[in-house]
Length: 192
Ligand SMILES: [Zn+2]
Image (cartoon, rainbow, N blue to C red):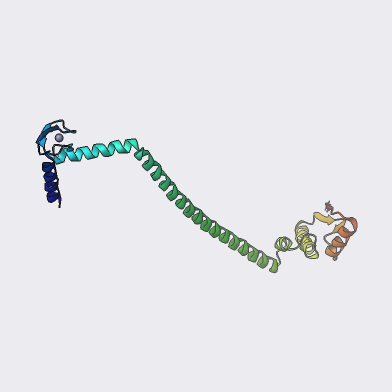
């Protein structure tokens, strides 16, 4: 295709009477060369290649091509970073829910343990499970304090002047708190 076209062009030039062989200077290497084509710029394929490369470079400079490419790449990198950030957020969310689940399990296990301790009669476990100032709370309190008193028989605990040794301690304390609106505890030292 290339050769017949060149021949055709040469024939056209011949017809126009431009068949004259010209001596031109290569725009790349500046060497002179012979040609019948007045628009020819390069002496050889090698120089043509260089010439096109230089033209491309000039075009890039004129159109600010490299800066545009740089900004384009930066924008793409930014997008990738945003995707990564979304992945990171998802990963952290999963990790957090895992931690939350483990925490909930631990709380549940502690509750089960506490309930078992309370069932077996541990007064502090009973107190922790009971509602504040409920009958159950004061019953557990009575158990705890009277057990301690029975160990040394020295320090007797009273709430609103009601002794933990009182059979109806819990009922009386609940009633007294309702009536007086306060809770006052004190320890009586028993002299043996
Ligand atoms: Zn050349």
